Length: 599
Image (tube, rainbow, N blue to C red; front, side):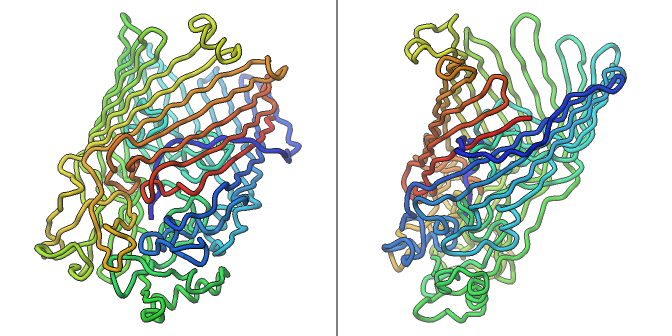
């Protein structure tokens, strides 16, 4: 029911492109200079493997004994796109207007993106809902829209910027969960071939101020005027792993013979993916129509989300760059409202997602040079961060639905969080590493990026229980990792919940790429590369579950950039490795491609 949260974007290429005949231009008007840039991209993604029965809950579709107990409520996206099928084939445009008036120290930026996907709605099992269709098939979004005024304070440079913008603090490259907690992310876009990172970071309305203070000191501060949450794949789309969160959510199906496990969902019962048949089956589930044999299923509705507040979000940072060494040291304080949700069971017996308010983060960072290496690091502390939990059970009894506590139940509890992130970047050039480039076929340059992340929640243990008072009664819960249905034996008729969330978890990302500048194709830079990510140990006990036991992925890509960059293209192959359910994308390997025309 959850989506693993990373910053790893897929890259790829397309075999055909339809470019709009918009002519970009650079202009001046008095002291004002400006440029209007446009990029038009065609991209596709093609599935390589059939849905796995270990990760799906409908045996009629996966062709074998399905894992209904764990995945019936999270398999619509997996089952909607079969092997050797396009799950995305899109056209996308991005337009950007930038104005600069140095005479008065004023700047302005406006950027918007829009797309149409020809393949996302071509589903095999369930139709996308109207809300899911609006997210996945055609969409227009305003990104940046800000104005900036530059000035001087006591002979030190300063500026104030107002409008939709991105605050990028900290040293992380790929991994989430650290200091860079101001803006939300569109994780759906990050998974689509041909997406640039700047398209997936969602600007928020803010007032930002920055100033040099002299003696190597600078400070920045912002106040956020509105809240927006992370965007996850819509229910039924290719990368969706939850049928209850986000656009298109449906009731969860629970077994009437063992309340610990999932039962056949509305799509299985309907046997027909039309919206009307699917909707009727889900309505019948909630009304108890299928509570008896053969389905033995009851539907649990999903109540409307409780969103974060638009107020009470701000941050301040201080940086020091000493003259004696090439280094930067940073201090940070952030107050924010969560971008990812927690889950509750309401007093009415419904599931409800909630975005928690009044979170705090304290952080420190540094970056410096060691020889040819650029080293970065950050350490952050959150006094209150939500840990995901199982349902509530009466204290002193079994962790089992037969011992479930009555009334509402928050499937989370605040714990302290410590997050460490270390990065290392190496630029390989003919001047410093000629033998490496020669070994790569006389490449012009190469780059190596390394990142290590570690997350600590003191007091959490997969083998431990959390005992607390809820609704005036003492209950016991066990730590989860995301909101997957974690069971001791999913194939058993008497399966029961287990704790899997661990106090400490860690992961790493390695990216290596090298470039041939005009030597393979005249006038083009050709850049092959690979990105490998892996959980080193542990299961992060949060909704996002950044790290899950032995889950890994490999993305192999080749990028083509014309010089000048009128055309860009790329192709990639992505494979997901690890045991189910820890690697819930294990059956969703794909190849992707894109081609972009810049104006």
